Length: 130
Figure 1: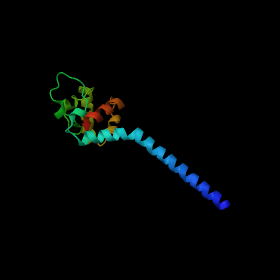
Figure 2: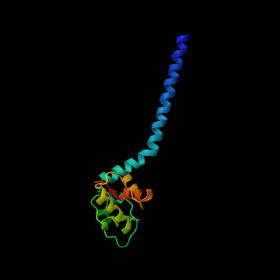
Figure 3: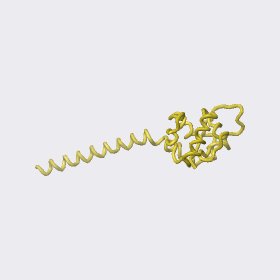
Figure 4: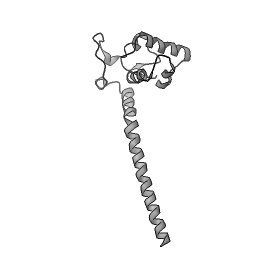
């Protein structure tokens, strides 16, 4: 009788544990998967510019061949093609590259005074780290 009770409790414990694990996996995919999938498809698939949304700019001729921009080799003018990146932000990025070398992650840009999370999110959409 006692052994049967232990077996039932063990089965209930395993079932509840599996249920909690499935919920945690589902939560992980809901919150983290969309960003990962979109950044992978953006960086690996340069041949589908129609999936990338650009701000309307009458002076831009052919954005499809411009993006993504390699952030470690981009010129000041190329960086300014990115929405909300003006001459001063482009200069900050280039100065940082010149002083510290290759940028290895977008979060590294947060250490630059004048560049915040919003700008980094925009850069992630239009740039790749090469």
